[in-house]
Image (cartoon, rainbow, N blue to C red):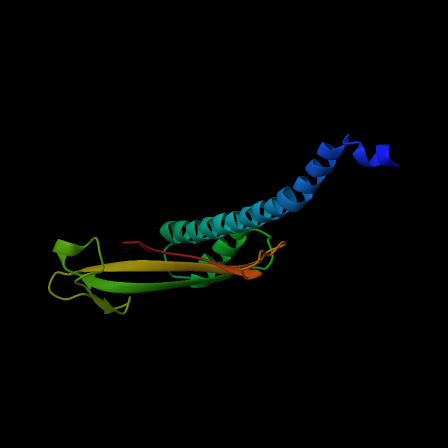
Length: 154
């Protein structure tokens, strides 16, 4: 029995197994969570871009069609995203026609006075929630993801 207690062979294998279990497994869980968050964020960004591209090609007349294009681009990941699309028109002075600063919001069917330019802006917002498969201490199990962009159409 004394020989068995003094035998040190195999100690390295036991230490390696403990290291793998206590350090590498939680690290793998964190990498999995970060990967899921990044892939969902990329899908939300892709959906937002698809909605804006649809608006560029077809105009902002139908916000439901923009929402449909964005939802389709998000893919079949669950939970499904919440997508909103809205448009706003501004009468901008010719000197500042690249930004909404200095312009006044108007109805998109009205006309601008005194040589101002009617400019339409579309905003597409995508939001969803990722449920982390391996929630880490200090982090919520449900992680909200959102992406929003505004683009000038005219």
